[in-house]
Image (cartoon, rainbow, N blue to C red; front, side):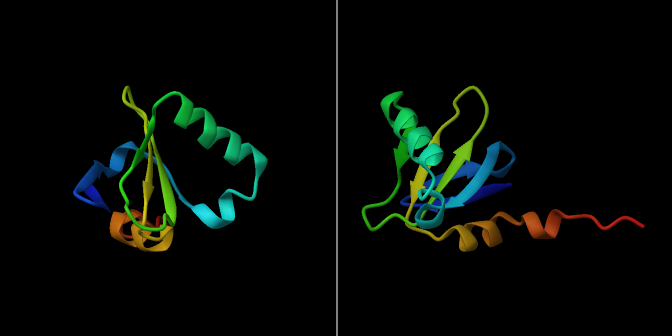
Length: 89
């Protein structure tokens, strides 16, 4: 399955490590350091011309950090993770 991040950017959902709210998660120094290091390494892809609201971390051989104008809550709903949760008895 794929997830649309905005500005004609689509990624595979199985490569997503996490979807984070930019405002609340960047309060932590560790998160700010991680984002700065990813930017320095050239792994940040900005897919917005507007005010960014979330960032998405992917895994794999081309691990990237995508900056999106779409909220983390909306991206999580779009990703279908909730639909994929299986309840076992």
